[in-house]
Length: 178
Image (cartoon, rainbow, N blue to C red; front, side, top):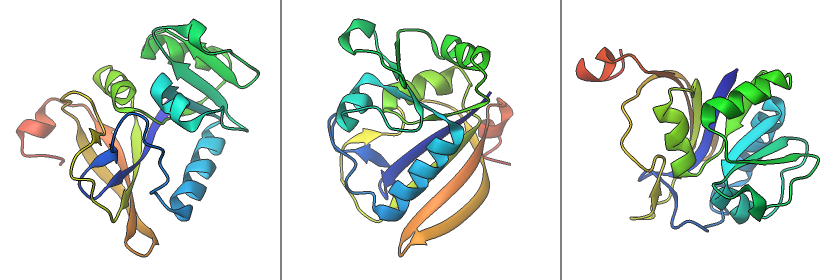
């Protein structure tokens, strides 16, 4: 299964000011791209905090919400609430016939999948704003090398970077991505 991390961040590397910060700062082009990429994948995986911030399941996609307390949300036709591991979730999605999924945060969920080496690609929109403090892409240190696949401007000063992730141990010790 192909797993793509899709996130918007500020120029200083923050995905939000705080846990319930609604992403209304990302711009229309980023929102259109997010909808296109996640609808194309067919599955959106997120944490409970991200789900609560959005407030409802995203239409046209299976929404997988990871939480330690699955009973806190009412599952529905396009909402699967689970306390399974990242590996268990991806295996279940494959059994259901899904070939791809989008990982959409937050930082703790991103870290769980990164530490399990399950993220294949990353699409990051860099918005030309600074928060100065806030939530980073990952909640804990990760050691992952990135190979740039493409870079494009989708609005004036808004850049999208598409990377493949490389988990080989020598990549970081050799001074970064090769």
